[in-house]
Image (cartoon, rainbow, N blue to C red):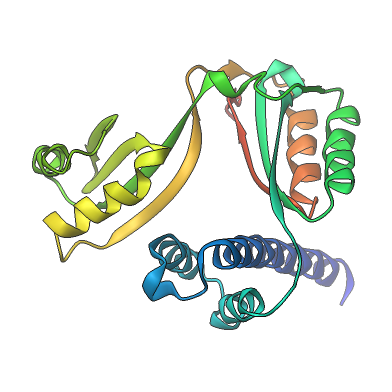
Length: 241
């Protein structure tokens, strides 16, 4: 079988690992949301939206069902959100969101990622002010103006509405996420949302040099390998090629 089999085996393991990471991420998020605000999607719009997002990311039904069943039981893990900020390779700004049941373990893991890549962990709030916390929703369409009118009529606070390549994308404050989606569904009942996320969008970008790129990529890989890390946001502008 030789070298080609070894390469394929590594590739398969990497893909399986990435899928496992995605499944674990959604499993935790679904469990926490269902535990805190009810495990019945019919009465929990936020949970229902998260389930729909998980399905779009090809999370198997059994992973979703297991998380909801777990949340419906007595006891279970007590996960809570933890956010860490700092400066990555090349001086870029980083925000790392985690869900953890052991804060000491998580902060140690994240700090190691900073330390081993010559990066600097910052205090809470040290870089978050450099990002906008936004809800982003995208769907097939070509009439941004009618979408904006419908959202304003529903008193939704909208940052921007863009139309590119047959898709309309709406940007709004993260706190408007549920209100935004409800207004869209009320105004356009046949609409199918293709992208639905709450994210940190950098206000400015930091150029990463070719020399800093390998360490930056190592930093991201190390964070991805941390079980408790859910999302990583940065303002790095990577060199082409």
